[in-house]
Image 1 (cartoon, one colour):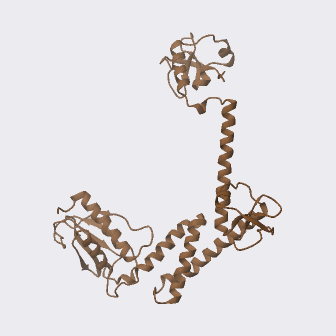
Image 2: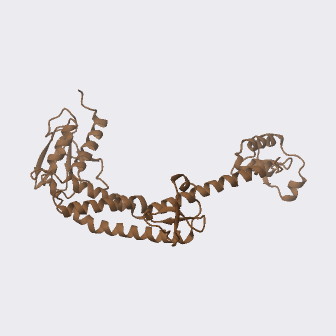
Image 3: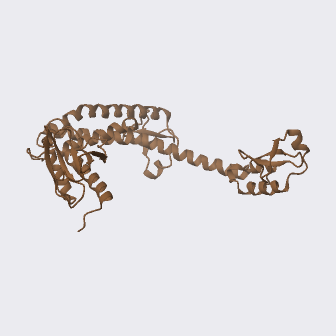
Length: 352
């Protein structure tokens, strides 16, 4: 099918008068000059456009090139093209609907089935003999058949949405009840604590998959659960500073604990070949609040790291505090990794 539009429509340009009043030109949107680089006058009126028998030849050639280079989306659609697009859209729509139906089934804990008196798919509990709309189940849909479903019994869908919303509400409630117990006095030998941990984990797994509204809270809750688990097995006398010094040692850096004015922190030389207490040269001070000698089980704040010069003047922060709650081991590893990577990039990694 031949496109019958005028050249300026095909090229996306505006017909304008010439500055000298002779041949009209074509002007690209926002351009100060015509396509032929000449100054222009006012846009052509409808009457002027209909009366124009020819345009500036340079502008015509440039406009023809613009028209040829324009994407197909800017050109009119053929009948065959429109039909093909509608067919593709209908397939995409059915696929989207199938995804929606199967996600609802998963969130509601239901399966797709056929009832005895019609061929429309229904929802039913896997252990039940009736659909959510009280029809007898005659056949459960296989995975292959379920992948083709794009229509659904309206009553079953409404019942499934109510069931999904109730399960989400119950999972949120479980998190609110089990979360505080998991964070308080973690003890893997306490059946109550183990039960709370299992309940919290199951609720978080469900919400992470089916409740986008509380996704951020879910991630935070999961991090808190992981942080609680890290407390298990820590020796009572291990301090936060001990953990960070050990993590730095794993990365080939020697550090030590220092105290001043009631505040304790971990200190380390910026250069890898300097001694561990290098106050006469650039160094890093790492703080966990005001007490790096606090027992790791009593952890209150995440680690932060700060670079100081040889004169003791503050220079800059290194890395960042964790945006989510981490356990003492994870946070010590994070801080050590960020500090060493930053220093190696600035001063160079130690030579083997």
